[in-house]
Length: 69
Image 1 (cartoon, rainbow, N blue to C red):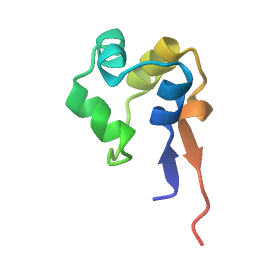
Image 2: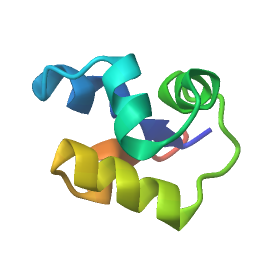
Image 3: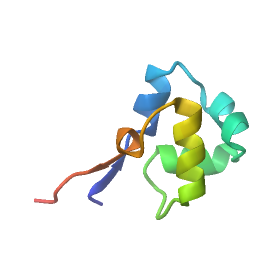
Image 4: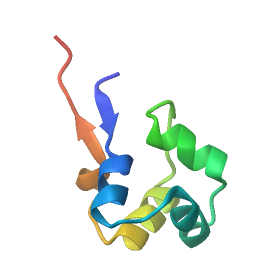
């Protein structure tokens, strides 16, 4: 899939654990883990907004488009 999820990178930059992010955005660890590993098929804008707010970042810091070859 040409969309890469860099959630783990942003979490590392902010020194935030999956548990802490889960508490801040009110999502289950399971759902965050699916997103973090790039296995998610979709993300709600409200979820993306909450993650960006918690990590103090922009959506482009989390999601990246990579052209398929």
